[in-house]
Image 1: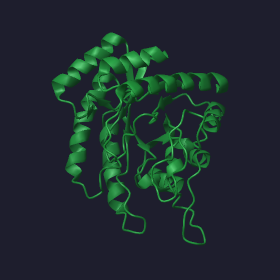
Image 2: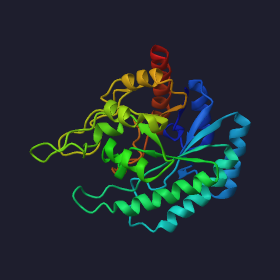
Image 3: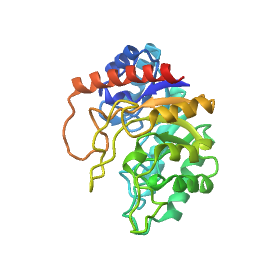
Amino acid sequence: MYLTGFADEAAQDLATQIKATKEIGWTKISARGVNGSNIHELPQPEFDQIADQLDQAGITIPEFGSLIGNWGKSITTDFDLTLAEIDRAIPRMQRLDTKLIRIMSYAQEPWGDDQNEGERFRRLREIHARFADAGLQAIHENCMNWGGFSADHTLRLIEEVPGLKLVFDTANPVFQLDRSKAKPDGSFPWQDPLEFYQKVKAHVAHIHIKDCTNPPAGETEPAAYTLPGHGQAKVREILKELKADNYTGGIAIEPHVATVFHATDGQKPDWKQCYDSYIQYGHAMNKLMEEIV
């Protein structure tokens, strides 16, 4: 196993992201955003400078955290926008020798509405095929997308999109209802992170570590994001399972302690606080790994 992280939670500029990574003692970054833009959205000259900067610093990029099919895009969004993202991402992954790209299965529609599943499967087959043809692996995250409705929904994606792999996020189940388990009153329980992992683990190629607590009644965001192992995401238990399963892939921290990338409150982050909390989170993750692995 190796450790990496979404260093855009520490800083927007790459130099400070690299500084944070090295301060924790790591040599890898899960690339998502630099200078306020996703890495596949940057102007080409800016990306070229970033690639050279990473080479000079000895930092590698095992994973692209793309915007492809993410929670902010409806399944009715023009598919050409997705295809353009793919076309921009592939050569950049090849330049950085990045093999994994995080994708999603488009935003959830309100439960009970038509989720347009057939179109989701069609698009994901095309997305996966385009990356596979380039020797790259698309990995689906259990976020606020169709596959995130339950572990069973994620497994359905695996059936419908041959060759698709998964990135499992430990905390996302904590604030997602399990749509495969209707209660007698018609409501749904919160997902169980460990149960979710156990159901899908045969297809997991990468891990994201967040931790948090269930949302308050009527809310959709967690009551709080916490250090790893301090919330309800069963991080310790999942790490122990990974060890028992002889998992050899990456584990990326995505703290969300100081800034939540899908929050809608419009507040600007305090980047000093973001940097300090990212460092604290990274060191806490190192300690957790020492205790468990």
